[in-house]
Image (tube, each protein chain N blue to C red):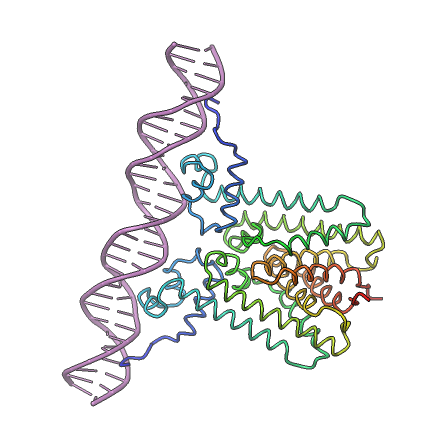
Length: 196
Length: 196
DNA sequence: GAATTTCTGGACCAAACGTTCAAAACGGCC
DNA sequence: GGCCGTTTTGAACGTTTGGTCCAGAAATTC
């Protein structure tokens, strides 16, 4: 290696991720990415191949974050698993970030035309789903959720609610309503009884 | 007017709506819209002004549909309101349409850059939310949901679940899991008891 | 059936797009 | 210190974009 890189690749990916998150894939020109990252177009192409390659890196990076989040929520006392789920939903509900999450945006925009993005999104969702299911199972072991209930379905309900809350946030639904929705979801999960 | 239009404007809007739904706004060129609608570019611009104008028309058209749907779900016996909600969620859960709903896609892609789209989306969500709340209120009057419960929150939960189910569908989550989520949402709503 | 009006679709434009490339700039190594 | 190899740069590439225009076809009206 004769001349070392003058930029931190991870920082560049993070900058690109923010830009893609704000203006989407097709809505972001390589020139804007160049401005956002501080790198010339040539450097971007040298480092990441092409625009798709850079997006893939940014998307991977984002999904790694959601993977980590799912794992982190599983840490802690089993008796507080539902509290952690509730706090996750509430945080989403309170968020005023209109650009939302790259997993949602990227999937909506590219899943049908870019198999690599679709595959990474599928994996991210599978991890999120498994994490939510795990939270419900913890709550079941702690006696807070009916042991006979379908943990996969209830976990899925947590995830679906979280995804929906983000959409509602983008659509200007009142934050207090959104927080009430988050609480209603968790309350419903604790109230449910398995069919006998 | 010496010569009448040779095309049905509503059909053209519907064709454009389908195209936008599949490839997004920035991902659809005017040439593709011309192919999809069967109209030349000149005719499209003559009739709708520009690409934004055509999208706005298509988006309005789609939102009118969701408005109608929300109203239609309010029709029927109050005692079956939750059944209608359940069926709505199940239909969403079963859908294998990967391109999803234009309200979701359009909002994700354009809400932050196009105020007119954002405004229409906000109105559509408000209508959906009011409809879901109405369904819960019907169920409360029919004695199926605790009368002291927060109808706005439970209605919001129905809507959030519906939005989330669509996202899960795009992400390849198993349809049987999705249907179970739909049922879990409604079951949770009937099980919830207001804090005393 | 001629006049008039409107619609039509391909040709056309400038701008912006994603991408490439040759040369300059620079750190590492002998 | 000087060569080597990589990185960086910014200009230039061909393509495609959104948008305009116009000559002529088509259809109603009188």
